[in-house]
Image (cartoon, one colour):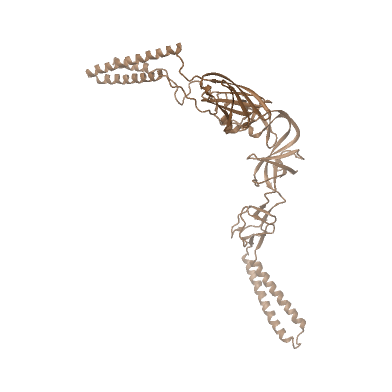
Length: 540
């Protein structure tokens, strides 16, 4: 029994070797995201920004405008190399030159001369080529290796002793103790294998392809080839005075002078015209017949009408007989000619009354388009019962739309007015007037949409921005450069180095349909990302 406990104790001590981080865990600070990137160097001037990347025996140079980060594709790039001056060749949006001297590790100082149009700049670029060979062992490394070899020898010796004990106990038929010692031996050998693997030097890590990454501090490393894919653009910020704007909620409505409703004056059953019911989006012209309404007749009305018809039929028959007699007597002078003509007129009147009574029962009401436009609403079905004053169709002219906004203050004549849709589209507006009656503690303000209105629809919600005479000092930036984080904070990205970007929290307020005003968090002269900020925010 004591032997078994001792074996288990040795197993516990040997199993308590130091643990190492494995995949899926983080036991210390991670290396920088750009550690595995290809060797590179960069430089900037007032006009250009250049990044030189060593790829084997080829030097790839990316040239951009400093202010806009726009690639320069038609420049002449000359590089002063260890083999002398060489002109780079433009290829695939970059400039390349053969550089066999990149295979030698060490520090390289290059001079890049850029000529584009009337701009010429000289930019010094430094590149450090690492040594990928095996470095000579240091004193600390030798001690670590000796300690690992000593641990391995100890483990193997203990394992050999356990195996000998197992053999002896097996001969004495102590099967239970032998099984415990066998288990201990397996654990020892497994630990020895782990130590052996730990002492085996790992192969040098190959340099992976450049990829965008985010550091622990929040800055983003984006290689120049990835910047081309993201199509990043920047501007240099400046502080200026801008008119202040107020923001109102609004929605698109049809122009009251170019829209209308088709309603029934009396209730009845709907029926289609000869061409059928016009469907949604169908263009119609003023005066077109869109539907028919046959009013229902109550039972008492039917009885009265039948009685009236019977009376008229009887009177018509009597007058027809009288007229027949008068026509026989008129030639002989028994009756006056005037009496014959009056009888004819009486008969014609009775027949007209009889026909009109039939029309009352059979002729439906015609629903006519009041304006020219498109059918915006209404899907009638044959046989459907329409109530009096029910809207059967709504007609809208899509080229003439208005916007109705709600304001808590009276709006007299704004300095400027634009609307912004949920998709980011900006609509210039013309002020048409504001109401004086409260509507849910607000005042209705109406504007006419100027210019193209394709793709807009009635009822669509927009944001109306009204310019005022009050001015505020700040930095005007495009709305697309502002990124809203998950916690509701507004962020922008600043281009701090050729391949590095920093996220900065800002305080903004609306300026117009395309821009916002930065009041805090951004200084003048910074290179602000105005296109591709959303893609930078997704880099992890």
